[in-house]
Amino acid sequence: MKASDVRVGVLLIEGTNCEDESVAYFRALAAQAEKVHLKQLTGDAPKEMRRRLDDYDVLMIPGGFAAGDYIRAGAIFAARMKYRLGKDLVEFVEAGKPVFGVCNGFQVLVELGLLPGLGGTMTETPEAVLAINDSSHYECRPSLLKQENRGSCAFVSKVPRGRVLKMISAHAEGKILFPREREKKVLKELLANDQIVFRYVDDQGRYAGYPWCPSGATYNIAGLCNRDGNVFGIQPHPERCFYRYLHPDWTRDDGGEGLGDGALVFQSVLDYVARRF
View 1 (cartoon, rainbow, N blue to C red):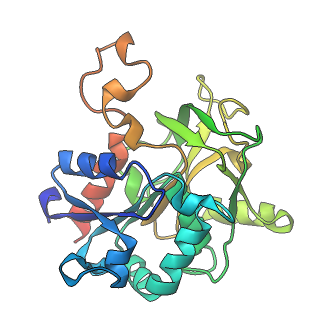
View 2 (view 1 turned 60 degrees about the vertical axis):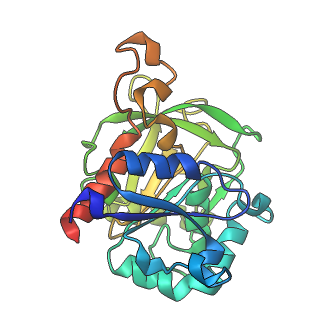
């Protein structure tokens, strides 16, 4: 399969954002990408607009404030998906197809039980939560993320381990937490399974607190994958640094020419699908 054969569905409901940019950037890398509303997948749309999850090779859940983030961030979106598409989602993931959640999309994946993924493909209840930032307010700032994965994650095949990427954090509920009584055990399992993909660092590549870790996330975690590496959630936005001129320091070196750090995530998953299917 070539990148031009890869079909990407960028899923949305009321309150999501960055879906247009995400579609555009997948298309910029030659993939076939389209926006798809949840109702198109659940059959609650005119026949000519309906889609099946199996129509896609990659599913992306973008950022935003889906359903107003009522109850908890991502909870309503996740509940709708699980109720109407749970069986299809499990089959999609177990077939090795990638699922990509950014910011609010990461929150949705956690609420669905697809991440962390310690107790199976999709657990009945969430194994973690993305809670309110330590600062108690919305944080929007450039973030530096160190790639920690040893090779299992489909979304960083083009990012060498140890490389630091610049992306944009934009969240109020980005602090990943695990059950207090199981936190050490969960972290140990995540490390053993190679599920920690990105961690926040400072400008010297050191693990650091606020503002470098804008949420106060446990173990500075910014991105996780499941055991098989094909479900990936990341809190900062790679699409907001897809082109070099979208980086906040774009005028300091090459004038913003070419692709930015965020493009590596998009390129990696397309390369994974092209090689595997």
